[in-house]
Each structure stands twice: as structure tokens, then as C-alpha cells.
Length: 147
Image (cartoon, rainbow, N blue to C red; front, side, top):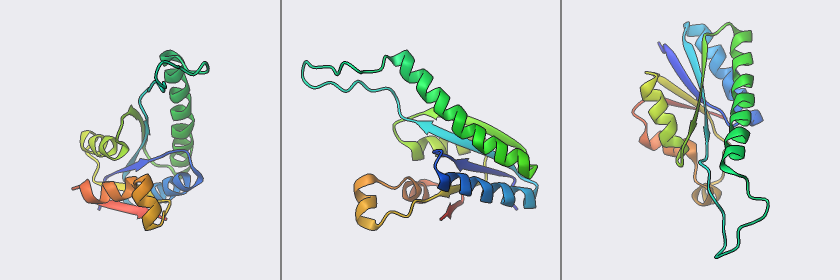
């Protein structure tokens, strides 16, 4: 039924469980799996004329997020390799993870997005925002929420 599944990962145990579930589903359908990690862009946090002394330089920030992305995507690659599923990893930078995920899904021609949800209660989700909810409301591609 599905030929190409996109799975966002944030490195959390729940996103690894979702990746395992997606790999199992992909294996059963002979589908390919793409994992995506979205990093926040570099921002300078300054207060009036005070800049914190421990502020990362842009190059150091780039190195740090690249290492994190490599670690998270490496976990997904191992899961897929062990399941015998074709895999590709994508690291992107964006202010809005749900939009970056949707853009990658379109670009990679994915026909399913399988995403973990931490299951925040309604009041917490309103404050924090729910990337899963944003995907559900914005996506024209089917979205499967894993909990």
C-alpha cells in the first residue's frame, strides 16, 4: 500500500519506538523509510546590551546540531538496517518543524508520515504546540501517529 514512509526523529525513546514500528510496517510492505531530524536555526540570545559570555559561536552551534542529528539519524539507520529496510536520512534546519517535515515529505515523494506523539494534554499542547497536531491539520499526505 505505502511505498515510502517518512519518520521524524528527535532522538527521544518514543521517536525510536516509532522508528521501529515504521521499519516493521515498511518491511511488511516492501517500502522505503526516510528519517528526518529538524534542528532549530541559530539564534543569538541577548538582553539589551548584555550578551551572555557562554554564547556559542555560529560555527560551534552548527557543529553541535550536526553531531546531534548524526547521532539521532544513526539510531534510525541502525533500526532500519536491522529490520532489512531501505533507509535514507535527512537533516534540515527550520523554525517550524512541521513545515520542514511536510516539505521533506513532498520533496522525497513520501506517501505516509509516521510520527511519535508525546501525548501532551490539551492545555500543555496549546502552550508548547504539538508538532503532531500541526502535521495532522496541514498534511495532505496520510499521517499515522504513534503513541
